[in-house]
Amino acid sequence: MPTRILKHVLQFVPDKLAIRLIRKISGQIKPLNLTELEQTAMAQAKAIRFGNEGEIKAWEWGAGPIVIFVHGWGGQASQMAPHAMEVSKLGFRSIVFDVTGHGNAEKNYTQWGYFIRDITKLSQSLNDKIYAYIGHSAGGVTMMAAHHLGRIEAEKLICVCAPSYPFPPLKAIQRKLNPRETVMPLYQEHISDQFEISWDELEKSAFYVDPKSKLLLVYDEKDRFVPHTEGDKIYALNPDASLIKTKDYGHTRILAAEELNTIVGDYLRA
Image (tube, rainbow, N blue to C red):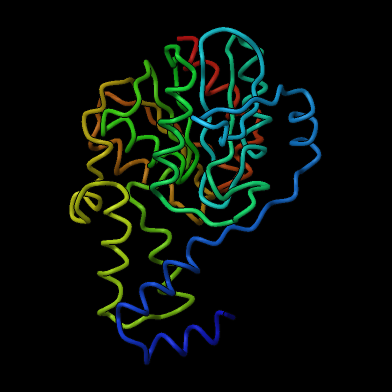
C-alpha cells in the first residue's frame, strides 16, 4: 500500500488494525547496492553460515580473536565489510552477517527482535570466546541489548553512531504516516516487547548502564540521523567508557572511513 494512501487510512481504522499496518510497513527492508569498496572487500571474504539450520549468512576475514560486526536497520553485511577486512589485518578474525530480512533475504522484513536473536545465534554457533562486538546504529543498540540481557559476552564493545534508545523509527513513522496519538503507545509497546523491557526503561537507555565489558562510543558531528549528542548522553551513564567524535562523515559514510579503522584498531589492540 502506498505511503500516502496508508497515511489516510490510518486516520479511520481502529487502533489495533492501525498498529498492524504500521508494524508491517515499518519492517520492510530494501536491499542496498554494493559500493566498489564493498565489492572488493566481499570478494576477499570467506562465505560461511551459522544457526541451527545454517540460516544466518555470514562472511569472515583473517584469524585470531573474534570480532563480530553488526550492521544497522536497513543496512547489510557488505556495509561493514571494508571496516571488518581492515580490522582483520590487525590480527583478528572479523565476521559480518546479514540480520534476518536484510541483504538478499527471500523476505525483506525485519524486527528489532531479529537483531537480538541473530546476534545471539551467531555468537553461540561459533563455540568460541568473542573478543569484541562492533555495532553500527541499530546494530549497536541491539548489541548492547543482547549483552545486557546476558545473551552475549565480550571483552570489548564498540558502538558506532548508535541511538541511546530506538527513537529513529518512531520519528520516521510520525513524519511519514502521522498516526493518531492513541496509536503511537501501541507502537512503542511493540518495540519494547522485542527488547524485553518497558518503554520507560528503553527511554532511559537501560542497556547502556553499567556494561560488564569495556565500551567505546564513536559518533560523527555531521550525523543527521543519530545526532552526535547521543554519544554524550550514553557517556554520561558510563563515565568509564571512551567517547570519540569524528567530524566529516555522517551516519553511514563513517563505516568506510580510514579514521574509523584507526580508532577501532587502536582500541582493540590496547
